[in-house]
Amino acid sequence: MEHDLFPTTIPSRRVNAPGRAWVTLACLSMLQFLIAVDVTVVNVALPSIGAEFGADARQLTWVVVGYTITGGGLLMLGGRLGDMLGQRRLLLTGTTVFGLASLLAGLAPTFHLLVAARLLQGAGEALALPAAMAVIVLSFPEGHGRSRALSVWAAVASCGLVLGFILSGVITELLGWRWIFLVSVPFIVFVLIATSILVPADRPRKRITLDLPGSLLLTAAPLLFVFGIVELGEVDGIPRWAAVAVLVGSVVAAFLFVAVERRAANPLVPLKFFRNRSRVMANLATALLSAALSTSFLLFTFYLQNRLGLSPLITGLTLVPLAVALVAAVTFVPQFLGRWGARFCAVAGIGFTALAMVAIAISAQLEARAPAVVPAMVLIAAGMAFGLVGLQYAAVTGVTEEDAGTASGVQRAADQLGGSTGITIYIGVGFSAALAGADPFLISSTLAVAGLICAGVIAMRITMPIQAAA
Image (cartoon, rainbow, N blue to C red; front, top):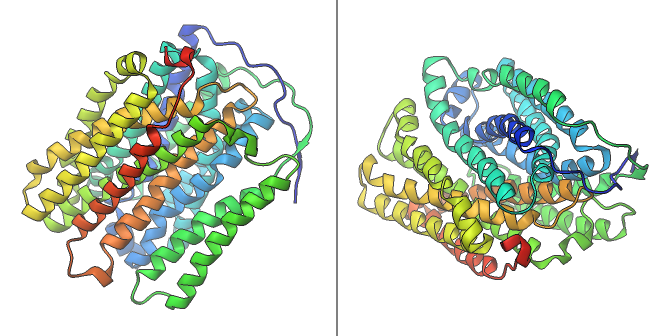
């Protein structure tokens, strides 16, 4: 079923004045930070949430992946809506939905309402983030200015992901788990006010149909996949045949999505969008890199809390070197990006991440104390800073106002769905009851390294226009 909406068919927007562009970036980076924090902020708080609502580990999984999968599955719809309805309109709408969902999550009286609020948070993110990134991309010209802006944007996201673990331990122990959601509400109100002032009004759009079947299929495929993987690894979950049937359903949904997009009058993601080989390679490599990065976060948490027995607060504080190293690493990324190009940064970041996964596996085998994990944290920080910025720059090079939102949505979806899928597969297989005799850290790290090798081969095939590389 399709509804009539208004797409963008106008020339590219002029680049904003430098001062206004950087103020806009600062305000939208706050939104990026809050959304990134909510990806990881629940991890250390999960035991407290489960204790209050009487939820087991299998149910608590949905508090984590429900947010990221829903957000990732709807991101391309959000990107397309931004191109069709206007970036400012979608940015305000998505931010409002995210803020209301955060308030609902903090006040949720039941576990099911908390999960519903997390799903709604994901929907708000899917509307807001592609529009925010498109505004930033169109506010800075290709070259040094845009590379610096995207470095800041990626660094803020990475810091949010890392600090989510730290804040989760601190807030949960000092204030209670509900405040991990409630503290963001005043900042979201500030972002709404700043966006209304700084971002120019959208221009008129022509009427066109929206591909809702494609949106539903794109969301259903990863949701069914994660549900099937989670249940397949549970001893007391649904029957094995039912879990396999769910996985088959996810594959069918993925194929139906491609079929729908081929026939849709106005597809969610126009297939011609993927004719740019470098853009496709950048998004594939992003998914594989994010899978390893997201897996490393949980491995750090499991190792520090479960194996070494550290408290939530100490676990969060132990991850501080990761955040500090990340801030230090991103200061060098624009220089390397301008001198050596996006492909060099992408491959370097993938290599750093692979070394980090090897270091995690070695630390677990030696049962090393917490300080021994710091080198792996530094390598993860370098992998995030160099890898994600390089791939992000390659994924949005050459966009115009007609497809900036789509490009941003696809890139963000690759990042988020890749991370969620990585956690599901790498952690799910590594910590599966069927492999109880093996070291889960070694198995998960090995799977992540295999994925990173594929990511490195793909990233090497990225080619950039001469003017963009310069």
